[in-house]
Image (tube, rainbow, N blue to C red; front, side):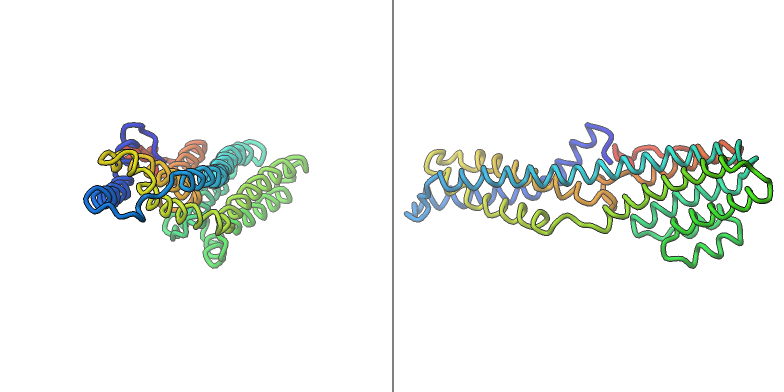
Length: 291
């Protein structure tokens, strides 16, 4: 996620430079052919292109709103994971009479959740945080974060029986685990349900067709200034399409994605420090980007 405006502007400029140059080159070809050869078929009316552009803006606005809603929901659900893991660590230490092993297992859960959403291998990060018996069970499961929650729940139930804890304590901790599981389910739903194919393909395709037609409708009025006006207008449509594409998948390895590594590190620091363990330093942005 881009957190520095200056670095973000440079990043967006680098990403936009190639389509900008392609648009400008096409506009130069159109204005050169029109001014030097003046082909009759190039005298196209502006009204059809105007109507296409208006419809395209509406289409892109709907797609971008949906894409941003997915991105924001993902960030909200990660926020719920952060808050509930902190609550679990507090309850494990105060109500369950001290279970630092389960607090470390919850840190492993955060790493496993990030790895599952990103499709990355995180065994080396979660194995040292888990008791040996629990690690052997969890590393064999397909859904490792869900397996960690399940084993934590079993350990809490065992503590209730052995330590004769009040049933209300068990219910409160179980509620926190259920809230974490619900947040994980929401994150997995976003990952497993891509944006409708119509929204993923059509805006970009139509935007590129529009950019090809745009200078043909402007060259009669602007003449040699067509490359500047057409490139700027066309670039706005290409930029809108890219914004939606960047936000569509909030979990991919991109500068525009949810900073899951930084969120996971925050959970790790808060939980390990709560039980007196040594914690790593917070993640800092690199070139204005927080991963």
